[in-house]
Length: 122
Image (cartoon, rainbow, N blue to C red; front, side, top):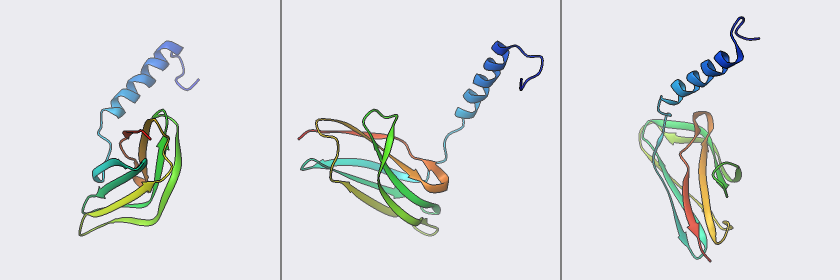
Protein backbone atom coordinates (compact mmCIF):
# COMPACT_ATOMS: atom_id res chain seq x y z
CA UNK A 1 0.00 0.00 0.00
CA UNK A 2 1.32 3.43 -0.91
CA UNK A 3 0.24 5.16 2.29
CA UNK A 4 1.12 2.64 4.97
CA UNK A 5 -1.39 2.55 7.81
CA UNK A 6 -4.07 4.56 5.95
CA UNK A 7 -7.43 3.06 5.16
CA UNK A 8 -8.55 2.84 1.54
CA UNK A 9 -11.19 5.53 2.20
CA UNK A 10 -8.58 7.93 3.55
CA UNK A 11 -6.21 7.16 0.67
CA UNK A 12 -8.96 7.81 -1.91
CA UNK A 13 -10.00 11.01 -0.10
CA UNK A 14 -6.38 12.24 -0.09
CA UNK A 15 -6.02 11.41 -3.78
CA UNK A 16 -9.24 13.27 -4.69
CA UNK A 17 -8.16 16.27 -2.60
CA UNK A 18 -4.83 16.42 -4.47
CA UNK A 19 -6.61 16.28 -7.83
CA UNK A 20 -8.98 19.09 -6.83
CA UNK A 21 -6.11 21.24 -5.62
CA UNK A 22 -4.13 20.70 -8.81
CA UNK A 23 -7.15 21.50 -10.98
CA UNK A 24 -7.55 24.82 -9.16
CA UNK A 25 -4.45 26.11 -10.94
CA UNK A 26 -5.33 27.56 -14.34
CA UNK A 27 -3.92 25.65 -17.29
CA UNK A 28 -1.18 27.52 -19.07
CA UNK A 29 -2.66 28.93 -22.23
CA UNK A 30 -0.69 30.21 -25.16
CA UNK A 31 -3.74 30.93 -27.30
CA UNK A 32 -5.28 34.35 -27.75
CA UNK A 33 -8.15 32.89 -29.76
CA UNK A 34 -9.50 29.54 -30.99
CA UNK A 35 -12.68 29.51 -33.08
CA UNK A 36 -14.65 27.49 -35.62
CA UNK A 37 -16.95 28.52 -38.48
CA UNK A 38 -18.84 26.46 -41.04
CA UNK A 39 -19.00 27.15 -44.77
CA UNK A 40 -20.54 24.66 -47.22
CA UNK A 41 -20.48 21.80 -44.65
CA UNK A 42 -16.79 22.31 -43.92
CA UNK A 43 -15.34 23.59 -40.64
CA UNK A 44 -12.80 26.39 -40.74
CA UNK A 45 -10.70 26.45 -37.57
CA UNK A 46 -8.53 29.42 -36.74
CA UNK A 47 -6.39 30.31 -33.75
CA UNK A 48 -3.72 32.72 -32.64
CA UNK A 49 -0.70 31.86 -30.52
CA UNK A 50 0.23 34.72 -28.21
CA UNK A 51 3.34 36.81 -28.72
CA UNK A 52 6.24 35.26 -26.84
CA UNK A 53 4.69 31.79 -26.75
CA UNK A 54 5.93 28.73 -28.59
CA UNK A 55 5.18 25.03 -28.79
CA UNK A 56 6.61 22.03 -30.56
CA UNK A 57 4.05 21.07 -33.20
CA UNK A 58 0.26 21.24 -33.22
CA UNK A 59 -2.14 18.32 -33.58
CA UNK A 60 -5.68 19.23 -34.60
CA UNK A 61 -8.19 16.79 -33.08
CA UNK A 62 -11.94 16.23 -33.41
CA UNK A 63 -14.48 14.38 -31.28
CA UNK A 64 -18.14 13.44 -31.50
CA UNK A 65 -18.56 13.34 -27.71
CA UNK A 66 -15.98 15.84 -26.32
CA UNK A 67 -14.14 12.97 -24.64
CA UNK A 68 -12.58 10.77 -27.32
CA UNK A 69 -10.52 12.81 -29.78
CA UNK A 70 -8.89 11.66 -33.02
CA UNK A 71 -6.17 13.48 -34.90
CA UNK A 72 -7.44 15.03 -38.15
CA UNK A 73 -4.44 17.23 -38.95
CA UNK A 74 -1.00 18.27 -37.88
CA UNK A 75 1.37 21.21 -38.13
CA UNK A 76 4.92 20.03 -37.47
CA UNK A 77 7.81 22.08 -36.14
CA UNK A 78 8.05 25.02 -33.80
CA UNK A 79 4.85 27.03 -33.58
CA UNK A 80 4.47 30.57 -32.30
CA UNK A 81 7.05 33.34 -32.20
CA UNK A 82 8.99 35.19 -29.52
CA UNK A 83 8.35 38.64 -31.00
CA UNK A 84 4.82 38.55 -32.46
CA UNK A 85 1.49 36.71 -32.33
CA UNK A 86 1.05 34.06 -35.03
CA UNK A 87 -2.23 33.13 -36.73
CA UNK A 88 -2.99 29.57 -37.86
CA UNK A 89 -5.89 27.98 -39.72
CA UNK A 90 -7.08 24.52 -40.69
CA UNK A 91 -10.01 23.27 -42.78
CA UNK A 92 -11.85 20.13 -41.69
CA UNK A 93 -13.24 19.09 -45.09
CA UNK A 94 -14.97 15.99 -43.68
CA UNK A 95 -16.60 16.95 -40.38
CA UNK A 96 -19.27 14.81 -38.76
CA UNK A 97 -22.45 15.96 -40.49
CA UNK A 98 -25.74 16.85 -38.82
CA UNK A 99 -24.27 16.83 -35.35
CA UNK A 100 -22.02 18.74 -33.00
CA UNK A 101 -18.27 18.53 -33.68
CA UNK A 102 -15.80 19.17 -30.86
CA UNK A 103 -12.28 20.39 -31.57
CA UNK A 104 -9.14 20.61 -29.47
CA UNK A 105 -5.53 21.46 -30.28
CA UNK A 106 -2.64 19.50 -28.81
CA UNK A 107 0.01 22.18 -28.48
CA UNK A 108 3.14 20.03 -28.35
CA UNK A 109 4.91 20.27 -25.01
CA UNK A 110 2.37 22.82 -23.68
CA UNK A 111 -0.59 20.43 -23.65
CA UNK A 112 -4.17 20.51 -24.88
CA UNK A 113 -6.16 23.65 -25.62
CA UNK A 114 -9.69 24.37 -24.54
CA UNK A 115 -12.41 22.43 -26.35
CA UNK A 116 -14.65 24.29 -28.77
CA UNK A 117 -17.71 22.97 -30.56
CA UNK A 118 -19.80 23.73 -33.60
CA UNK A 119 -22.92 22.19 -35.17
CA UNK A 120 -22.42 21.09 -38.76
CA UNK A 121 -25.70 20.81 -40.67
CA UNK A 122 -25.60 19.66 -44.30
